[in-house]
Image 1: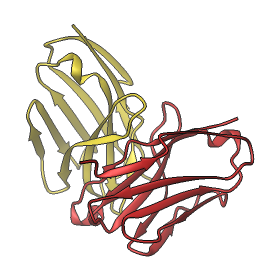
Image 2: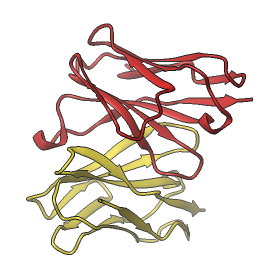
Image 3: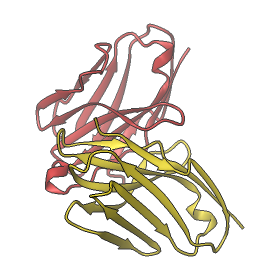
Amino acid sequence: DAMVIQNPRYQVTQFGKPVTLSCSQTLNHNVMYWYQQKSSQAPKLLFHYYDKDFNNEADTPDNFQSRRPNTSFCFLDIRSPGLGDTAMYLCATSRSTGLAGETQYFGPGTRLLVL
Amino acid sequence: KQEVTQIPAALSVPEGENLVLNCSFTDSAIYNLQWFRQDPGKGLTSLLLIQSSQREQTSGRLNASLDKSSGRSTLYIAASQPGDSATYLCAVDHADTDKLIFGTGTRLQVFP
């Protein structure tokens, strides 16, 4: 009864080779988030979708893109991964935002290694 | 700019001890504060959410308090067990941005 699913769980890619990470949810939540978490650091929000509205964080590199083709799926595309993009990528969903008192539900993460 | 700090960074205790994890934040303009658990190499699991108007929340052996005016929260774990070993992350939903700002976590080890 997994609610937020991420694929793959582990991804190894070469420097500069595009990679796509997938997130799907069975909760029918309106909001989907992508976070980057480097080793021993706090998760850092990259962007989020509220329904079809895309909200990018000001300091998210242009190298990172996202797509949400429907309510259930959201993708993270890294166009030209650098060594510094090695991290855990976490997808999360929520029914609404914190203003409405809603918590976020996280997937298991995708561990990306850029060689 | 909202900043979230967690002390201590790591904690090792024997099974059965009651323990307190601390979280502080610099801007009291928050919608809520949440505590998450993260097992090694895994995602985050929400433990407790405290609305800005609330003082505490309880779930089983966990109790979280919030003092918004002083920018502090504590997570109290009663009768700790080895299965409680994980990293505990505190996050505030900042009212200016309506986004979660995380601390770097407290890594807890409970040994038998």
